[in-house]
Image 1 (cartoon, helix red, strand yellow):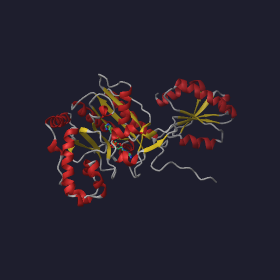
Image 2 (cartoon, rainbow, N blue to C red):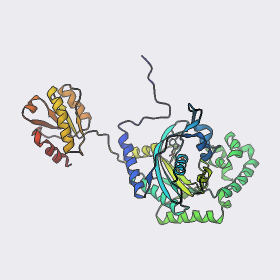
Image 3 (tube, rainbow, N blue to C red):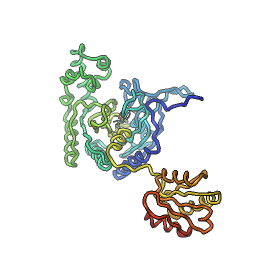
Image 4 (cartoon, rainbow, N blue to C red):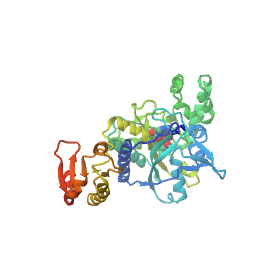
Length: 424
Ligand code: HAM
């Protein structure tokens, strides 16, 4: 026998018993975003590689070692999107959405990163992302953060911590960077291999190291705060005041630097300690330089993306989620005539009762086998149609989840009867 082909490592199917949970999350999120005036945008999954290099940064982990990059038949270098911000800015620029106007946009879909798979970290994963343009903040920073806090409330997710930092402007960061290089160079012998490499290319990322042997060194490093100018400080203070006023608790994390190069000023992450090492469920920040970097006019921007798989893991552990019940009513059809007339009856019922989920038994088979399927479908009741019932223009009704005597209902009254039972 031929060997089964399996899914690619780190890429997962979402199975029918999980999709109701995904839809629950997606529907709630879509609802909340709509209430804040966000509009959905859908971008291609594949973009020119150059887009990600220019936006995420050449010397980030994502661009250096995690992208799914390939040449297409024309010889163009293309990449499966590792995130949504770059494509969203590209699309907004391309279609003139940024000219003299503000935008509040959102998107959802799969992203691809060739990381080492583990719990909460996959090679194909899903984000729901938000990007806003044309608003210099800090009001919009505060609003999108409050919106994420509302999302957790309305999804029933508790215990997330909001971590906040400011990265200053690119000029401020450049001065800080010089200072960091000076500090770490003076302690070069204590740097691990990764950090030594980053020392020249991306020294801020050294602060993000997970290596416990470097914790002390990092602890003693200069902090960006000291290099912030007056405007950056005020932006951050005002943001914090607004969050306080809206009752959104947050903690400062001066080591929060993010893994993508486009950020400036505000950065934030929502983290949980319930998912092991991959505890960030939502992350983002301001990226005022990116639009110009991709060829547009200077445009302030701020956004975030949440990891759907990580939120799902929290939801499934905690919240009450809709189950995978497929049907309300199951039509048991005995014999050839019932099979044919059952289809017609089901159509009539669907016309009359558009809110009921009606599953007909297809494929024939005995009474017992059909009832087994009826039971598995999750239906509340079975409508039974056989030769005798058809002869009398009736259907049998058998309740599958409660002790109730079987009834015979005239076919013409069946829709009203079901409407009463289900109150729909
Ligand atoms: P990010 O921090 O790279 O930011 O990803 C955002 C979220 O996506 C993470 O917090 C995490 O929940 C989820 N995520 C990332 N990688 C994986 C993975 N391999 N497996 C499972 N989940 C993952 C961005 O992507 C930015 N574009 C966010 C943003 C939007 N900033 C401004 N606007």
